[in-house]
Length: 201
Image (cartoon, rainbow, N blue to C red; front, side, top):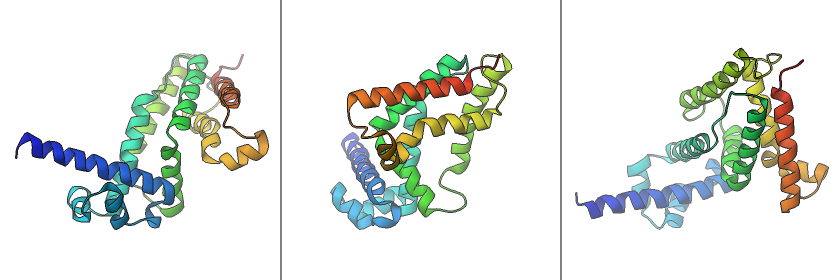
């Protein structure tokens, strides 16, 4: 195979993944078809089956890519409550700038029961973050009053709720589409995460 053909293959895969990400985020895996994704990607549907398998496998690929990008972009620190607050702020920013991730996770929750795509690998990723918090607890830099796995979930909840249920946050706190309001919410997320993590006197 020539380098040109290899390049075309990767380019075609990218078009498929980009189109699938848009469709899955908008309507969920049950709300679209391989034919629709192929049309929006401008490729023959057989390419999708060849490169990714069926729709479930393609959804798993899209979510795996989104999770890997988020994990690499927003590492969690273990050095202290201030750094945990900073992490929450950076995660808030990431979710605001990449709304597809939350939507994909919501569709996964709504349409799948039991084990989900890449559950083992993703569980290991979350376990790494929990271990980081546990290391902070071991040094006294992070509160020990909460189990580290619970602390991990609570930080994600404080940070992700704004993106997960924007209609609820709009009813409570008003529209969130101005820079000033986003800054207010971000500051609150940072402070809440910091308070969750700070060691009690």
